[in-house]
Amino acid sequence: MSISFADRSAVGIEDVPAAPNAVEAILVLDDEPGMRTFIERTLASKFARVETAADADEARALAKNTRFDLMIADIRLPGAVSGLELARELRDRYQVDLDVIFITGYLDVYDEIDALRDTSADVLRKPFHAEQLLAVIKRAQERRRVAREQFLLHRECEQRPSAKRIVGESASLKDIWRTIHRIAPMPSTVLIKGETGTGKELVARALHDLSGRRGSYVPVNCGAISADLIEGELFGHLKGAFTGAHQARNGLFSHADGGTLFLDEIGEMPLALQAKLLRVLEERRYRPVGGSQEIPVNARVITATNRDLAAEVLAGRFRKDLYYRINVVDLKLPPLRERKGDIEHLARYFLNVLSAELGVPTPELTAWDLQQLTRYDWPGNCRELRNVIERSLLLGNPVAQYVCESTVQNAEESATGSPASSLEAVQRSHIMNALAVAGGNKTVAARALGVSRKTVERKLKEWSDDGSVDMPH
Image (tube, rainbow, N blue to C red):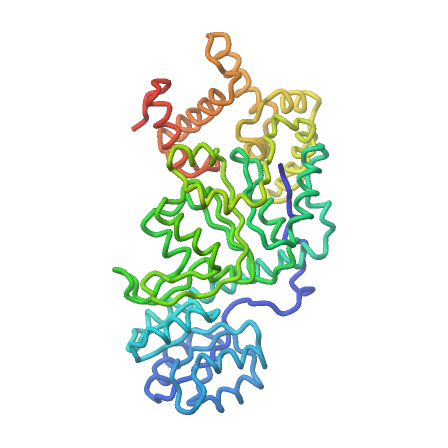
């Protein structure tokens, strides 16, 4: 399956209303004169405008007349209003997209939890160095860049008919698209199943874009994050929760609040974390690492896998209760070999998009090209087809040349009696070829195949156990 979004460059910046961009104007709010001076001197030469305020009234007056991108605010202020309350007030009254970095000199974990529940992602404890302050501002700039891209994508999706984002005319694709339209506005969890490269993330994006949810779309590849880090990535952590946790940070659930969290390769998630994810889905609350209080969250969760999760449950590698919880709606994407009528549509689409990106002329697909494209089984599905098209554009050779290389190899295996026609044999051949090209480097091969290194290692282990391949070192 391939659902494609139009080139973002089609949306002109001048036509887009205000949305988060770079950090240029900063408001510093602290009742300590020395702290205000330190922050102002640190930032004055690096940003277009830095203003300081000693209390809430001064901050209100400045925010009323100036559009600030970022506020650095002490959590505890003299008077009845805290820095947290003032930040929310300024967003509501003057600037909805104001980023905030909270600073505090008190070891009060409840202040820190309240800050984490805010849309800010960082809390700095006093005293701190200039380098620490600049580092958290850099993270704020990155958040604004991502928010800008998401804003443009949402704007683009609103302006363009949904049908233009679909490539293919097969009956199975149309059925899936009708299902996407039906379930997109619902809050239910969705499990997207399909082989690698069938377009699972594109379907997840389409579900979010058509959902009407105003929060962010946040994707995460569960197979690309180590088991000891993934809990903190999902739920965030408080300062000091573990070695190296110098500041509190929000997790991906926080960033997806009001939007969609896409958990790709959910089958790679460690069993211990599966239990915590199940609790979040049931209770709609999560607890940051090192925290004692739970934080409510309103994020729709969409998951995807290329594994047979039912078999994983029987093997004890996936929790049965979590499987039933995420499998409320089941979307199975067909492999490209089962919808060969869409190959020509996809190939022409990739040729047009990639030739524009690469700045090269768009070549014509010959009858021979199309014949070879439709004869090949595409074990890597749409992603492999895209890579073949891109390679042909980069090297200036016919598309069919690269398809023939794989087709001939499969025919040779069949002539020697090996089961090249089976999916497992094709998959094995494809992975071993990628490893050969990468000189045995599993990370490089995985990147070329569009899968995680863990997936490559798992397949090699399976084949090594049954004696079908020698395990690369």
